[in-house]
Length: 158
Length: 382
Image (cartoon, rainbow over all chains, first blue to last red; front, side):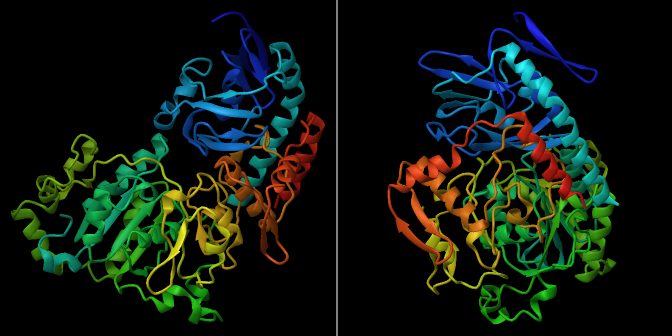
């Protein structure tokens, strides 16, 4: 892999290769041919999720997605989340391999663990440096969100 | 075939079915194995492991085998117990609700279907009270209800007692099993299903009489369709009117049914939101209330959706249903339709496409708006 930038999530050093772009919702983006962009989870997302056990796509190939439209969901050891379109466009490919073994994301998040390919305008994607700025702003919120929910869960279990 | 010995003995034993989850979680897999193994060791009990119940279709070997079983059934799945019961019912594996004491405590509460049945003013209209199910009992257990096989075993023993199958009076059966090939062997030899010895945990071979859980070896594709809780459904036909994808139909007795489940649009739970009786479940939906939980009690894990770009919404169920349906119509290359929640009248019109689109294509949000999301989360703190 080429060079990368590092963002400290507490003690964890999340690496972000500079050979690609990033979406605000913590996916990386590699521009391919014909306006097709391949997406996968950034190290930031994978660190929050940890071991991924389950992935479901709520769409099929050729679906048209609006920006931030929900297209599936993911569950890991520690968390669960909907999946939201990183940009508007047509889904041209889904990584079906991940359905049977979503741990592929943990194993090779920047390579074989890619999620999907969308054809559309990717001009809104962030450069690695811009993404790191975005992370610096988002990190406090992320921590508080997680802690807030963790408190709620604990109080429910009493 | 899955019958405990020969025909007549069927109702003299309990079938424990473990429905495997789709998740690769090692904790879940090992619990499934442990439950199936311990069930196989109990008296008068046959233990069967099937793939994820909800994904099975009508031709599945698991479904065919389950339909042959006429005695009591315990179904364990990673679904809310209500969903597990009605998924089986949909497969024509029917019975009465067996009372389960081992509950998923994350959602356990007073709103139990069966308890309010007595004073239910609509009781007479409920489909299940008109189309009465067979008398044998089906006990549906959410596997999230316990962390160790022991608590499940205790529940199985309690159920065996309820069914009067706990006593050693069934010695004949056990002896029969011991002397003749066990029913598990019979299954493995009948060619239509097989015992998958490789998947059985080693411990299972040490169980009494060498009985191991039976396993149906099939690998269904993932599915998505609504499941009707007929103990709630009043046959009002709101769902058939609302769904524009031809999922619903009626049987000869004009009772609503999910006629074309695979017409359903993956991920879309819209019809469950318009059901006035909360009788429609999507067992795989992440919202517990839609997935069959008694009430909306939130998730069991940290929900990262808002960090991963979930749009902020403030809409009532009717609006959500209309939006979700329009999203699916557009995905299917069809025109969206207007929905007037007040009169519940549908007005078709292609101009609505633009309206819907602009309403939900909101400008990108800056991180400061995430702060307000956080405030919402904090206010949820109970």
